[in-house]
Amino acid sequence: MNPAKRSHVMMQRQLMLVNRVIDPIKTPSFLRNKVHSKPYFRSPHFLRKPRDREYEISSSLFSSSFCSSSSSSSSATATSLSKVGFVGWYLGMIKSWPILTKSVTSSLIYIAADLSSQTIVQESSEPFDFIRTLRMAGYGMVILGPSLHFWFNFVSKLFPRRDLFSTLKKMVMGQTLYGPAMTVIFFSLNARLQGETGSEIVARLKRDLLPTMLNGIMYWPICDFITFRFIPVHLQPLVSNSFSYLWTVYMTYMASLEKAT
Image 1: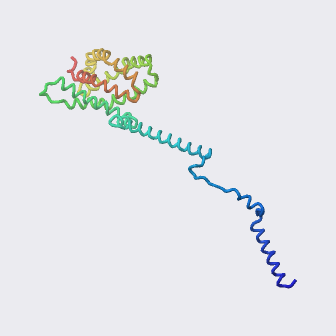
Image 2 (image 1 turned 90 degrees about the horizontal axis):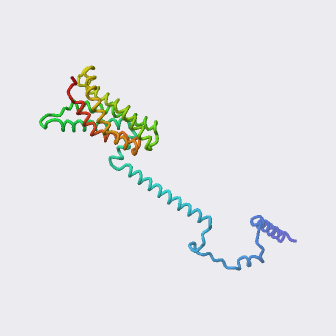
Image 3 (image 1 turned 45 degrees about the vertical axis):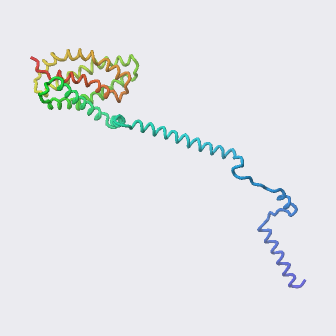
């Protein structure tokens, strides 16, 4: 074999070796036509039946998005309803600053009650006694407001249920403990701020305390029943202050009476 022919044969062998390395698995020639003998048609995407897994994923995504959107919309609606107007603002203040909010509420109610009492009792030509109104506002701010907060929290912890029997027990405690104590404090403090001595304060209590307590028994039980039976604890001071408006008109009148002789 001449050198030229030998080199040609060697080149062909090298090319065959390279093809085997690049494509080691080749389909036999007699199978190539059979593999692609059947025509292959790919149906459009919207005509194909979805796989079960795809359907589960899509349905779960849809349901989760729907539930989340509905829950978020309902929570947003509830939040917006709870924040509408003065009531929503007041509830937020009670939650953030409970004692201060209840104290300011008591002070404002005592101011309105005292001005109403002066309007009823005094002649139209007489001026308002704003010093007296300031005393009532200070009592509601410093004493009554904080005491109502702690009293209602104490009673609710002592009797947490709001059934009839627990409500009656709260009413009895209010009429025998809290009510008399606050009445004595109110009369004594107001008289002291007017310059009365200790003996004059005692004489005033002997004259005014018993009639005030008897009138309170006729007024406060129904108010306490509504407050303890139907009102949540954090709103009970507000409701009690609302009931106390008429009572405070009477109390400021009693406190403004002349000294006892």
